[in-house]
Length: 239
Length: 373
Image (cartoon, rainbow over all chains, first blue to last red):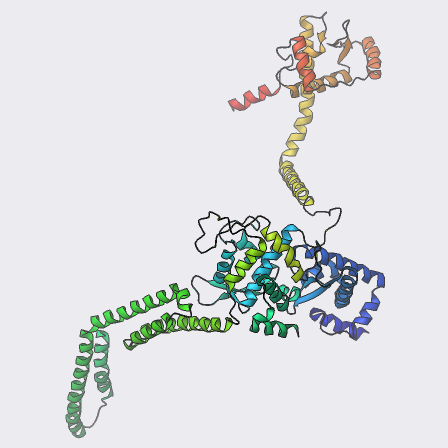
């Protein structure tokens, strides 16, 4: 017992890396009520943290909720995920295995015509969908100049306050990026520096290339197969 | 260059001079002759070298001019390429090829590392552009027409193309009036494509973490100022405490003297309490006066009673044994709480026409003292 405890102590920093052999004994030390309490707290924490759609870091979870229950971390996370799925129809997904960052996504198939998002959110999602479609159809990566040129056509200008979105540049380059819907990387050796945009990890989880292609097809009144290479790529992704 | 010339000359001669060891005279004579011949040849060589270097040195300025020109041409080429990046990327243009050919031509005139470095810099930029062009070729995919897509989106959003909007940015943008609910229309369509978790909100509102924070700050400020005040106090406290007690006693004595002085002038007329205590210039001093007078009555040195008009009057008590006994008992039994607010104070001043304070303010004296100091 003492040996296991010692090794568990060493392994604590590596946490949920397949030390399942040791977990049952540690979990037994904690009473089920204590664990359930922690699980409920974690569920509430995740739900509240998800309001802004900014990914949740494991460090925050450990500091605010888990605290001294560090050894039962993976068990608590697993149970919280199960609660979220069974009770709320949501799923806890790790989008960065290295830095341990989580998001909540909807487990249920896309609801039709339900007001799950409210006005302002919906409009932002509209803009986001348009941007994601553009990026995908243009080969999964676009330069910022190309993106803004495209948005120009939709009366959305980076330098001008938009009636609906306000500071669009900030929305796209900061909010969407922070929420991990978009990813921006600098193009080397450009002066003045230019950036390129790609799908962020949250976009990868919340939507799919196939869905986005269907959206484009719907808008343009064409069959998705019209764009052969995008179609094949979209179908490859789903498998 | 000129330095090189002189340095080129000295080493061989120096070497020879250094290398000449002391030798027996016979061999020395033969060797001397041979060495002399060698020296001559070497000198000729050195002279020839110098000439050569000098000849380059003659074109030295030309050379520098030449190199400078090459560098400036390179820099111009680099800046042109960077500024016209978009034009170069256009798959229909040959400008990148032309730029590369230009650089090739320039490179022929390059003979030093400095210009070669510029050439390398240009090459890096050009190859980056080339890479981008290549990736654009690939990403054409199945020719996605973004303009058509944008137009279809606008149509979906409910654009009215018959009305032409008057905007100054409408150079490339097709005319048409976009209704206010445009993005809402797309917004209603969008959630179907996302598996977005609905945001969690308490139905009855939630505790917001904001309000406590300002309170904490205020408390901290108050605590901080209190602490500071306390820290400042210990140094002065010792002085102040004693003077406070003394000051009160002194004040009470002073007021008693004033009261007695007034009474001596006119022993039979008791003084109106209000006339006595009220300072028409300061409410605070009025309150202080009442406070000090209360000490007098407590100690049995003055008494307050109501006259025929039910107005309070004050008079000093002469220290006589009988009077003391009676009055002290009487005084011990009666307690009065006087309340006075600013409004009442002002009313009293008006009613009784109190123009000046009978109890002179104590601080005037100290202020004068301070001024003289």
